[in-house]
Amino acid sequence: MKKFYALIGTAFMLTFCGCAGMTPAAEAGVKIEKEVSTYKIAAYLSADDAKAKLASAGFEVVGAYKSFENGTTILFTNSAMKAMANKPTRGLAAVGRLLVDDERKQISIANPIYFGKAFMQKEYNHATASAVLGSLEKAFGPLKNSNDKWEFEGLSGYHFMVGMPYYEDMSLIGEGTTAELVAKAQKAKGTTAVVKLGDERYVAFVEMDRRTNGFVKKIGTQNAELLPWAVLIEAGQAKALSAKYFIAISYPALTMTEFMTIATVPGAVENDLKKIFK
Image 1 (tube, rainbow, N blue to C red):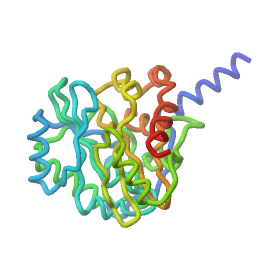
Image 2 (cartoon, helix red, strand yellow):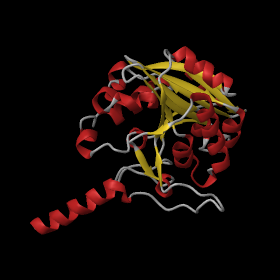
Image 3 (tube, rainbow, N blue to C red):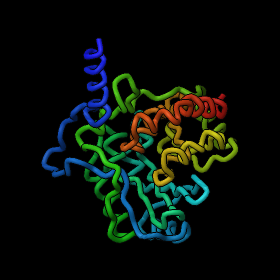
C-alpha cells in the first residue's frame, strides 16, 4: 500500500512540475524558444513615466490600479491587440499588464507571447504578439527574462495539475444583456477600466475585496500585475478565469505548499465577482 501511495505521489509531482498541457500545432515557419518567460523585466520608472513610455510606443493606457502597497498595475492596449482578441472567449488577451514595482525598483511586464499563447490558444498570432513585445522593448530598453517561465508548447493547454481547471474552464459570474453587464461593471466601486473590443464584447477590470487581494503578499508581490481581475463580457454572460488557473499561470513557479496557503482565495474571488454582477 505504501508503494502504491508513493507511485501516486510521484505522478502528482510530475504533473505539477511541468508535464501538464497539450501540445498545440506549431506555428509554421516561426522559430520560438522552447521555454518562454512569464514576465519581462525593465529598468525602474515611476508610474507616470511608464505611462508616457507606453503612449510614445503607440499604446493606449486604459487604467492604473494599486495592486499592492508598493506597486501599481498599468493596463494598456492597441488596435492590433484588440483586433486579435476580438473573438469568442479570447477577449482577455486584448489588454497588457505592466507592474511598476516600487519595492524592487523595477518594471515587470506580462510577456505578450506567454499570455498570448495561453489565452489565444489555437488562434494565437505570433506575429502580433512579437510586434507588441518589440514595441515594448523599444520603449523600455533591454528587457530581461523573469525567473518564472513555462514551455511554449504547453501554454495553450496549461493547468496546474490533474483535476485543476484549464483556460476554458471560466467561472460564470453574471448573465444579462451586454448593456446591463457593462453598466454593472462601470458602476462597481473600484473598477479600473472597461475596454470595448466589439459591439457585444468587452473586458472589464474590477476590484475585489481587500482581504481577497491580500493573497499576493503571501505568494509574491513581484507578480502582482494579475490584479485587478479581468472579466470578459460577451454573449449575455460575464465570465472570469478560474482563480485556480489564473493564479497558477501567473505564478508558474508556485509550489503546492505555497498554493495551499491561499486555498480559500479561489472561492473568495468568485464570490467577490458575483457580487458585482448579481
